[in-house]
Length: 430
Ligand code: NAD
Image 1 (cartoon, rainbow, N blue to C red):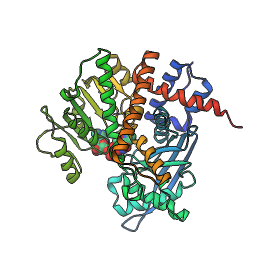
Image 2 (cartoon, rainbow, N blue to C red; image 1 turned 90 degrees about the vertical axis):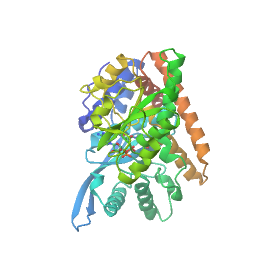
Image 3 (cartoon, rainbow, N blue to C red; image 1 turned 120 degrees about the vertical axis):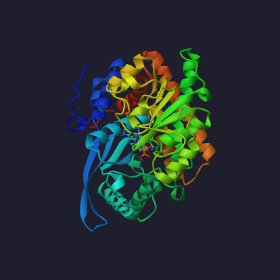
Image 4 (spheres, protein in one colour; image 1 turned 60 degrees about the vertical axis):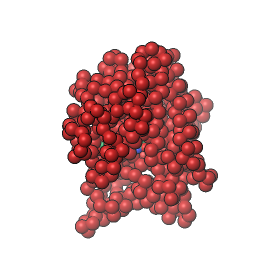
């Protein structure tokens, strides 16, 4: 059973082609009903909007924005909002597709969605950020809501953007609606543990993978005697680096958009976090040697955490990677063909839909807490996060044995199995 990858406007980005190819591989292996596959290859609904913003200099700039819902069979759409100069409808659609699989995989009653604005966030003042976010919210307001589609932060956005979005939505309703977004600041209904949840989850699954590899006698790895490299030092990468450091793992190289650092003896991560808070980049940090972002890929280590953007490991640079375990903090950091090369070399890849699911899991907890107006302690949040991630990891490991495939394909099969059951139960309308 083979299908053409051409799905019209959705399929123009490399990320979409990659996600679609991964889906097709999983679908073939599990023998998925081709009618279900046809629906999963395309988003359910998408909106493209023009967002006029009065800039600080008095001029009006019009930005392009999108919101895409990929599949809402399991529940309301869930997915972040990205501010990035490369955003386009195909990339947002691919990210929405990944969200459907992620929510399904970890057992949440949520579907997949994503949004984005084509803008370089570093070029905007705070006032311009606010105007852009509020007007974007109004333009897509018919698509979002606590029962319909619940945005969250993504690359280039943070809790402040969610606060503006929640406030704009609430103004229209005439009362506060905390459940319309997650990733909010604590004072307006955010959840304890949400900012750290994705990075924490990235490390929880590394622990499970090590335990699995040691048990299967495929490796003998101790996290507290291992080395790691982390690409991207933002909301995900910095927390993953801290969590690894806390467990005694030596983080020997990190990078961000501006450059990288290398210290074979291990970087002092808490000091680096304080440095980045003040300097907005890892570049210039004393106590490590400067390297380029590309050089980071060639640093030999036990664990590699790509936590920046998609498509960073390709056929052009995959030969540089010397590691045992990759935990995909970012969405789609490894192209399908590069993934094959790595798996053939025996590298264990913990796929994005599993590795970075901690964020959406605690987003779900935040949404539930907001709906009930009853808030949990950080220990409760972390404990429940650990339980959900452990269950998801075990399901994926079990599918990997059953289908004799890598964790990435196994994760997709596990996700698609659940969506497939739900789609068949609900049937096709009308
Ligand atoms: P962020 O904007 O906070 O951080 C991104 C980091 O990557 C920054 O340090 C930036 O300088 C760096 N970066 C950008 N381009 C780079 C490049 N070419 N090389 C090296 N570094 C580069 O974003 P984030 O929230 O940490 O998200 C990172 C990735 O994780 C994205 O793929 C995002 O979709 C994914 N993700 C995030 C969350 C979350 O909760 N934040 C959840 C799931 C997935």
